[in-house]
Image 1 (cartoon, one colour):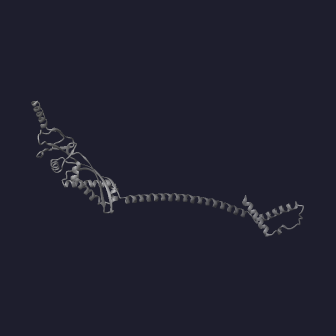
Image 2 (tube, one colour):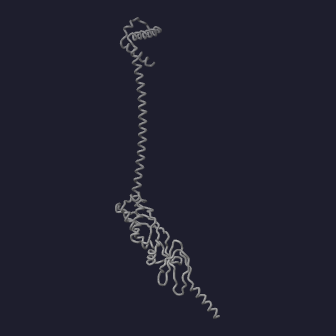
Image 3 (spheres, helix red, strand yellow):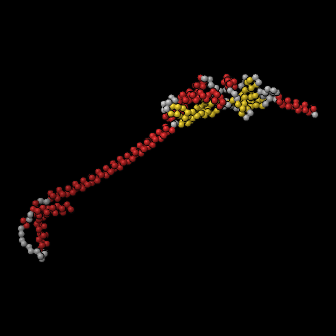
Length: 307
């Protein structure tokens, strides 16, 4: 019984003394934390076993070197417009893996536990070193413009901010690389949105009024052309009647008028002779008054025109 107990203790001691299996996944580097601090060597992605330990065991601490999404929502007071502007910035950041940068991060940033694994994430490094710098640069760059300029030239301004951020991080030896940056969403104040909507409505109203005026002008021009055509027709008719009257007037000579008088008198006398109640007294037809002559002339002209 005693021998069996000794064997169990020996096996447990062997198992305890065997170092743990660890892994550094892709897009990460690692350092081994010993009882005396981090080992100097930076380890690439790999799998290995930690040294055997009894009292003080070594621990692998990872550093995330993969691309990490960047997302910030910033409210900025725009002095030119005297209004607040809300912007959402998006980007991609990563951590350089040169020896100097990695050693500085391990020395100054505390790792956190993730599924039993100690790790320094890219987001932690960004919040520690880059967040305030990025926010400050975005503010200092955007206040150079008006809100309307930002809305109209968002892509160009995003590029200029990216350049400013990159230069600032390099100048301050910040252990972060921002590989992509953009103003993903610009939210102007409500008063500007309402003003733009009102301006657009006015523009639409003006365009509609101009279109209506153009239609009315075309209709008026057509009506004028029709009126001109109607006047031409009426004038042609009037000129035709006048021409007929002039021709008829030229054809009535004193001889023709005298003949018409006689012809008319003959018809009258013939009609009277056919009546039993009329007594005919011979008279000289030359005694007809000028009034009768005028009446005959008028009748003659009327009949000629009627033809």
